[in-house]
Length: 288
Length: 288
Image 1 (cartoon, rainbow over the protein chains, first blue to last red):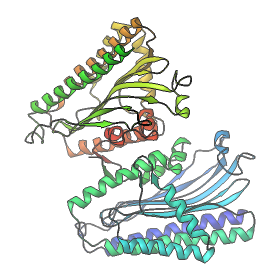
Image 2: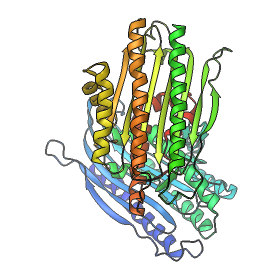
Image 3: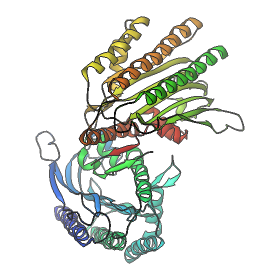
Image 4: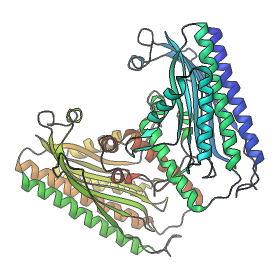
């Protein structure tokens, strides 16, 4: 089990490094847009420790944030935390009611872009160990204006990634994503979706190997597709009207995260690291 | 009972009219500030109907919004709605479990100001009738920079208003306000507080008369104190740094309303009028 935990947490760190490198490369590559004369952004890394449980180390994480000329604000968090769930909380987590001990490692990313022509994006994958163990995660795209080519490309690449592992994955995980990233009070989806999966159980080495491989592929697919989508649009000029539309659309993102997102509420209501959790908030928002 | 309902809903409308008139007068009175050369703002009123319940009228309301040169965005909502609570909901409302029929009338106001030197404010009072009936409400001030004179004045005026009715009100309602308008995840209060009260039961004409009179005084006290606070600061110049601080502080307001405020969540989760409910969102916000 220790070996599996190490493999998973090492991968999340590697993926974080690859993403940050790629995003900095995009910052360097900008030529168009009104921000092209600014310095390319660079990630700043802030480590944090989870408060000790009765004097015992309980893990922590690293927040990486870049405020750049392509990426207006992007946060990439990795964390590996462990300890004991509160009894109330344990009820909601598979395998925790019997034994409240847990271990969780993951990566979580939200990007808000300068250009209203470049979609915002969210990606998160995680490995959780209680008396059970599983992988979960997903990625979804939030364009301010839907580009049909991007949409097709994003969905197709995730379909390929899923199909490589199990033909039942894609339809199931796409639907799950559409259902999850939906604002009932607005009766509108947050974006164009992607995939969302959870509870890919890893009771033995073989299932761990499969689901870990899938989770790695999801991370790679995210980076590959999103990088291309950003590169395709970042040099285009935009109007003030498009920017205004983006700022309003970001309001929906805030509404979703604060009212509905279980990860955000989970974190805030269990004394998680507020800065890391709310790094997903857009840098500038309007409700006119 | 019908007479009481009419008295209450008529008052909320009168108070709305008085507030809107006063706020428009403040718009006219602006002389300083970078927005003084813009046209004074005026309220726009939008009536809305609550969806019928099985073909039966269920009330509605009026949203009044002004986007002005003193008031960046202020929403004043009045509504009188009636019908039946869902069974799940009825459990949370005094006197509704026996009989899900309800009637509710109220006024609700949130103001976000151009100047970071003028506090934001919230006020809400309501009369609710189930198999029981009661008044509730309150007002609280959210300065971006605390002015000790304003703070003292605001609290003192509400204390006078409370003391006129019952010496036990002020300490109880001030504490209730401080406890309610608090962001646990930030471990910080939303603003400097004010008063918050609920369940002032009106089983007979005498108690109705008293609590209605108190509720009217709360509305008048709010208008009188806030008008003076706005007038005292609105002509002052501010810096870009102060504006930035205001936009960040507004983020806390959003966090409170979407994560904690029971009125907002109540409304959003029971298919209330989304535009009216989210009129409380600030026009421009930053999470840098």
